[in-house]
Image 1 (cartoon, rainbow, N blue to C red):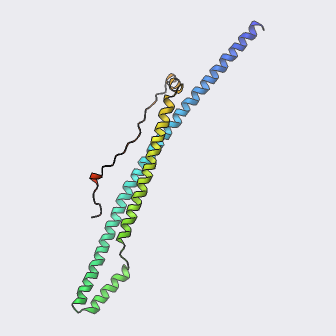
Image 2: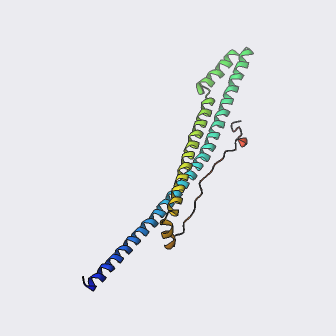
Image 3: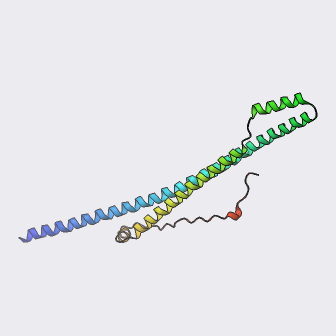
Length: 181
């Protein structure tokens, strides 16, 4: 082999190594960006579900309170009809009671409470799943950016790596209150 061929082979080898290195560096950088976006998406899902919980909470409390008010007024009409019946005003009592029964044949406040609690339970389960997913994404990201040679290549490329902290939720049951008074 002549000297010119050796130079071409060495230059080709160096060029191939550089191309492989830069392709790897780009792949590592893109992997970091992808995992960072997954962490941000997971956090956004938690925020979205927390807002859903707040909206659901407000709507369900309003609905139950409204329903209870209507139920209370219905029960009062029934009590008034009984009082009229006891006073011997049977026709008036019967008319009042029939009007109430036609408008509101069943008292369902207990089913409203059950539905409210079911919705809250579903929302809390979804939040727990989103938090678990977030923690998984954080762990995946943190491992990826700390791994060798990813950490060194990302630093050489000037990419700053962020360290995300997993979420820890502790529930203080001492602050629980009766919301449906």
